[in-house]
Every structure is written in structure tokens, then in C-alpha cells.
Length: 212
Image (cartoon, rainbow, N blue to C red):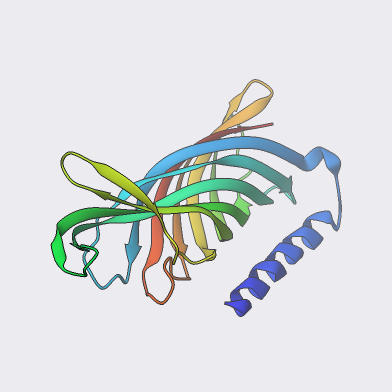
């Protein structure tokens, strides 16, 4: 895990040093964004089902040249997955039946990205985002449910750190003094979501935002 943390810090420092080499305050842009999507995991030993993912937070973007800008975000994200027919045991350890389980994973997340925007004229500007993210676990739980009731429990074995790669495509649309953005983003985690297990989060987000 340490090597991934070192890599993330190195990328962050490189992006910051590059962006400030020829610092122009007018090229610094701020914004807000939110979105929802589909979250699941890969490499689980059982078949899993997806659940709804959410993201909300802020954007800090610095334009380096006509084509490239560097973007850092601070997001609160909710990811997770579902399992069917999970065995439930009573206090004596005997099998009491089966139920459905939903794993809900909340993170404070910092994506560090490069944004590539062709210098086209007009109010529509397509772009591509690529980079990585690091998240710190802040709110994890699992939910057992059947047709009539759902009960939440604290998830004690969630990993503290999530880290992975991000790729996105979108379009900025001129709106007044700023820009409205619509974006499709895929996040793929490199670290397991649960301790001592192999499953890694994968999320397809549909996000929108406004920056100025």
C-alpha cells in the first residue's frame, strides 16, 4: 500500500510544480460538481450486483496551455455492491436463513487529473480527463434486508484507503460567465475494498458541474 501512496503524492507534487512553473492567477478556475452512477466490484469470489453510486464536491482547475489543464477535485463519494443469499447465523452459530446484503462505502476522495481540451471555437468544448484518485474511508456500513425490513450495521473490515485510476469524457458548455459540464467517468480501484479480500471497486459515474 505504501508504494501507491508514494505514487499518488508524487503525481500530486508533479502536477502542482508544473502548474505553478508559469503561474497565472487568471488561469485558475473553481467549480462545483455532483453526480450519480453504477457501482460494483471486480474479483469477488461470488457473483455480485451493482448499487447506485454518488459523488459531490468541488473543482480546482489550472490551465497550462491551449490544450492541457491540471484539475484537482475534493469529493465525497459513495460506492459499494450487493450480494444475494447471504447466510445469517443465530447467536449459537447455527444457520438461521439467508438474506440480501448491501455494502455501502463512503470516501473523502481527491482525484488528480490532466484535462485535454481541443482549442475549438464556440460554446461547446469536448474534453478528456485522465489520472488517478485517492480516497480515505469516512463512512462504511452494510445493510441486511429482506422483503419487509432492512437493518444497517457498521462495517469494521473496510479498507481505510482506496486508490485507483480515472478516465472520463465530457463537454463544457458556455453559460453566462462560466461553463456547465456534463461528464461520463469511469473509476477503477487498485486496492481491495475489504480487508483480506480481493474485490476492487469499479464505478461508472454520470456527473455534471459548473465552473467559472
